[in-house]
Structure formats: structure tokens, C-alpha cells
Image 1 (cartoon, one colour):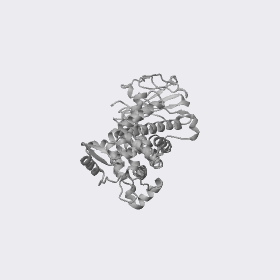
Image 2 (cartoon, one colour; image 1 turned 90 degrees about the vertical axis):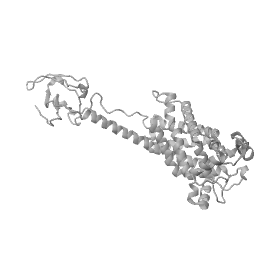
Image 3 (tube, rainbow, N blue to C red; image 1 turned 135 degrees about the horizontal axis):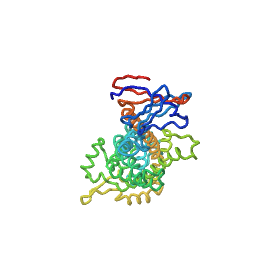
Image 4 (cartoon, rainbow, N blue to C red; image 1 turned 90 degrees about the horizontal axis):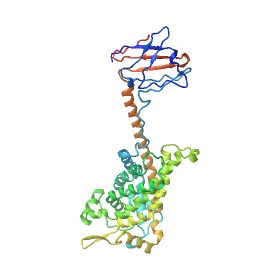
Length: 435
């Protein structure tokens, strides 16, 4: 501050070619010779790193330069910003939680389709298909019936996917590193399996509550065991803990973890690979996909189909285990229908045949497909929004630190005149002088 304002006029010894503009940076200490109308001058800023070159408007006979001081632009936001770390994990929970509001009716139908025909509960079959299930549920139980377990579904999606989707990028980075562009399929499958297992083991109690609430019905069209009657989400935890013991909240953790490993590895692998292909592979360039909601939705549709194909058998087994009644034998909780995960699988195979493992497939996909589309679109918007805000914050910091110091210089290059004019400002006195 406190430096006088002046104008420097350099002679043709500093000719500026249109193809090679001078690189003025933190080491700028030019000695400018002058014409007969101007005195010779050596310009040595007190703080060379605070020299700023601001762009002149592009026009005929002139060239504009970027603003810079030591660096030519604000800090670049990393490509994976918003996909990893705490931001990535929070966004991975918020997106699916919002999607659950729209897709829960299909989840209710899927659970009930998987329970109907269960030999141990009478083998009752009521629904022809998932749409018939939704219609009959709506007729007999109203809108509330199609949204049973909604609170549990929202909390389940938010908490489980906080780990299941949110950990995928960090785990993959640890397995593959960030210096390589494309991770092989097996590393993606392993990353998805690890993140899926963590989410399943942590959130199993919510899965049990959600399944029982969605299966519960007082209508004549009810299927499966109907002995669990809870007043709501929190009440279900209280009743289960009191009647079955806290350990009951971890019933079926093994099959739930297997299911989540299969689902997450297939889902995240297909989603990430398809997105890379559509956006970066020249073979698909003619399709015109760009980063945005459409690409997120298309990739989610493919990954949802892969997810359902991989985990539907495990999902049927888990639904049966979660919803079966129990008895206490020697102080331990024992399922009345199925003694174990393997016992459940063998019972289904013997009494209902191998196709029973694919019960509810249509409902599963009609729930999972739209769910993944909505949740990955939501996640994409959140990630791009966070990236945009970070870019704006970096620019504000850059401008605050470098574009508005006490002293700054604005250079205009006039190529046709082969001269350099520099305007030097003193912001303490708010004066501009020209010489």
C-alpha cells in the first residue's frame, strides 16, 4: 500500500507476438527499455508473487490473457469430489432415502409376493402378480397399506446406503489407487462386496423391522405369518427386544450380508462401468451421453437389473427368516419354520421347487429399478451441486486473495501496436494516473 500510481510504456524491445504471449508470473522482474518519449524503467514489485495480470477483452488486433498470480486459475476441484469421503457417504444416504418414498409400494408388494405360498404358514396364494398385489392391497388396506413400513424403509435406505454406496469409492481407491484411470472388474466387485457387507451388518435390525411392518396386514388378502403387530417403527424395536431379546435384532445377519454383498458388488460394478463406457468410450460417443441425470438414470436401470438378478434368491430366504414366528427352547430363540439359513433354503427347494427362489422377481425389479434410478439421479444432483459450490468457493477464495490485494496491475496487450501498456493502481488513494 501507499505506492504511487503510474503508467509504464514499453518500447518495441518487448514485442508481443500473437502466438507467444509473455508468461508473466511470480518471478516477473522485467527491465523495460523505452522510446524517446519515455524514460527507462526497471520494474521490481515488492512482492513479485502478488503480480496480477487481468485479461483484456478479445478483439481485433488484441489478445486477452488469463488472470493469474503465481497460478493461472483457482484450485481445481478433484474429479471424485462429492463421491468419496464424508460428502460422498452423506449423499449416498440422502439419495436412496428420498427414493424410498416413491418406491416403497413396490417393496411392500415384493415382500408379500415372496411370502405367499409359504408351506409353513399354510401355502396361501392370493396375488397373481405384483400389480395385482398392489391393487388388492390398495382396495383392502387403502393407501396406508401400500406404504407400510415407510418410515423404516426411509431410515433403512438412508443408513444402509450411507455405507453400501458411500464406501464404494473410498474402498476402490484403496484397492486400485487414484493414479490409474480404470479399475478392473474384480476390484470393483471386491469393493462393492466390502461396502455391502459393512452396510448389511450394521443395519440388520432396521431390515428386520422393515420386513415385518411391510408383511403385516389385517386384511383377508394377508399372506405369510401375521403374528407380528407393531404400533410403529420405534414400538417394533421395543417389542422385539422385550419379547425376543436384543439378539433377535441380528436374526438373519448371515443371509442379509450375503445378499448385500451380491447386490452391491453387481450394482456398483455395472453402474460404474456403464457410466465410464457411455461417457468416455469412443465406441459409444455417437449416443451423445453427457454427465447428468439422463446418464445417471440409464446406468442405474442397468445396474438395478444386475442387482436383482444376483440377489433375488438370497432375498427370498431373508424375507422368510425375518418374518417367521419363533419359540424359546432352553432360553434361546428358535425359528418355528426354519432353524437356519441353510434349513430355510432346503425347505423352500423341497416344498416349492427351485423357481420359488425367484418369487417376487418382477416386483423386486419394479421396486429396485425405479428406486436405483431415482436414488442415483438424486445422488448425481447432490454431487454436482457440491462440486459447483466448491468451484465457486475456490474462485471466491482466489479472487479474494489474489485479485483484490492492496496493489494490483492490469495489463492490456495491443498486438497491432507491438506495445505493452501497464496501468498501476494505488487502492489506498483510489487514484489512477497515466503518463
